[in-house]
Amino acid sequence: MTQTWDVVVVGAGPCGAVAARSLVARGWRVALVDRHAFPRQKVCGDALLPDSFEILRGLGLADAVLGAGHPSSVLSVFSPGGFEVRVNGEFLTVRREVFDALLHRAAIQRGAESIVAAVASVSEHPEGAHVEFRSRPILRARACILATGADTRLLRSLRPVIAPAPTAVASRCYVQSSHPLDRLVVTYDRGLGPAYAWIFPLGNGLFNVGVGSVYRSQNRFDHRSLFERFTTVFPEARALMATGQIVSPLRSAPLRCGLDQHALRPGRLCLGAGEAAGSTFPFTGEGIGKAMSTGLLAADAVHAFLRGEEEGLDSYAPAVLRLEPRYRAYSAAHRLLDYPRLMDLAAWRLLKSPWLAGRLTGVLQEERDPRSLFSIAGLLGSFFR
Ligand SMILES: Cc1cc2nc3c(=O)[nH]c(=O)nc-3n(C[C@H](O)[C@H](O)[C@H](O)COP(=O)(O)OP(=O)(O)OC[C@H]3O[C@@H](n4cnc5c(N)ncnc54)[C@H](O)[C@@H]3O)c2cc1C
Image (tube, rainbow, N blue to C red; front, side, top):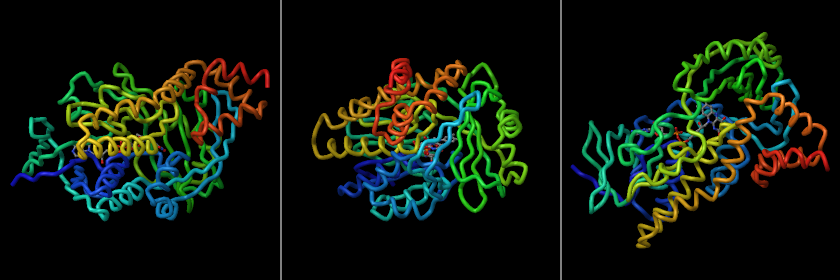
């Protein structure tokens, strides 16, 4: 039997879940489809940065998420040569199986219909979009939001020009350790090459530990040996492992960083949002907050369209592209990975210049434009303040 919906949201990660919740809250009939039943695992660093809290507060979900996670007020960033820059802010680690299930439940409790099945294809017809499965009857919808994470197959079937390859790959495992570390740590240590690694405490001696690198199709990435190198060369990781043990296998997943303009509008009735549209920031790999904010922007555009504003869906891409300068600044920062000495100089300046350190805090709190920091002008400016 065919079912008809106002909106079908494909992918129930943070992006799809908040989009669905926002649309049912405005009275639309929404199906929220995922190939997995929730709770489900998602390979991630499990860290929420300040931009996520603003969104969660707006959704009335901040207290529930805070109650499920482990707060930290300091993020330490180590440069290739070992300069440590500490940034104060509101950070929270929460396992994705818990966080995503909480957002999913919030959407379902609000009235979205949960459908657990893999979508095989999406097609567009004069009367609406068809969402097709191998295992169940098709769904018809007036509009679709495709929030399928780094898997862009559905988007590309509508618009083949969308980039197929991820931009980065990252891997994580969980470590149980008695090492007394209670701040988030990210390092670009020289010993890792042009890669990064992190240690994020989850409370009760549990840590999310991982490594990430740019995706290069011609090279097979070997994160197992990168992880071993990390836990050998980086002092905090060595100390963590000296009193700890790995309690889950090292798992890898792709990332799509830096907005993909084509993916924002894969079809006439379909919007692409979240990581599917490349919403994750380059350099930091921070994607949860941006996935949720693009999901909410997609929901606003679909709401306008369903209310009868013919151009409603057209408002989405320009709204997301207003964020583009931030992505360009983080891409510029990412290119610094090829210039470790310049990164060391930047870190050294951050330690010497309260003005520059204030800017870094402002960027992470999303109160400042990252271009004020990740640019030659930003760095040179610090020498005169
Ligand atoms: C190792 C690693 C560490 C990371 N660490 C952090 C971090 O600490 N902080 C941070 O902010 N970001 C981090 N990120 C990025 C973050 O995980 C993503 O940006 C975020 O998950 C994107 O959310 P999303 O909702 O767009 O997609 P996802 O969370 O990937 O959700 C997509 C959903 O779509 C479903 N789906 C896909 N295809 C289909 C289909 N055909 N049919 C039905 N369902 C489908 C999937 O099952 C999935 O549930 C990390 C990423 C990786 C890989």
